[in-house]
Image (cartoon, rainbow, N blue to C red; front, side, top):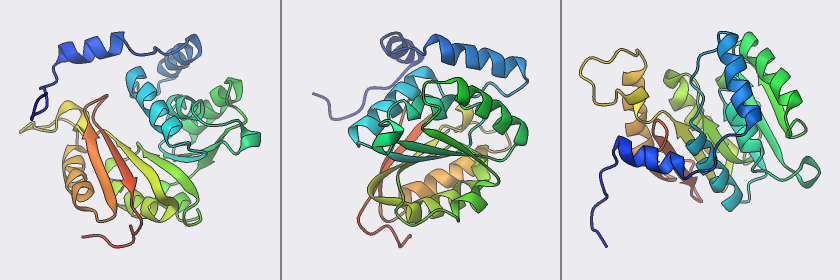
Length: 226
């Protein structure tokens, strides 16, 4: 037993990754094709995908929303954790860039979860405002970081009580503690982390996997925020 957490090092991450279910040939091929198409190679790590699948299965999630489709990697991975469509499994993924949406749709159509994934095009804030209250079991935010506060506000309305809000890149692309960060969205991530930690109606924690993943549960009354 220990009263404090063990410091996680690169060796721990390598150890973890080596003992986690790896991505299959289809997802590996998708990543290679996305890179060849000039799509940024910023998909979630396979071990993060596996962890998110475990979370969704444990929560018995059926309806899931993703903001930030990119090439469709995470949408396909998460959809594999949902029931078949005739049993209510559905993942809605939102993408602003037309080129990315075209690529993702083509690969989703070839996947084993084509019947469970729907790509919606448009700005995340606009699409989220069209979704009914308490219509989703889980939301995964992985889009523009400056938009996160608004996406969170909408997610608190959309996700049912007891559902999950997952948010990627809590470690700000590895630059969370950098005094001179290279990525222009680092400050937005820092500010959002403070918002997440103080939001009434959320019980959350940053899990040190991938680039840091916020895992939070929506409590019974998420309508008010500090």
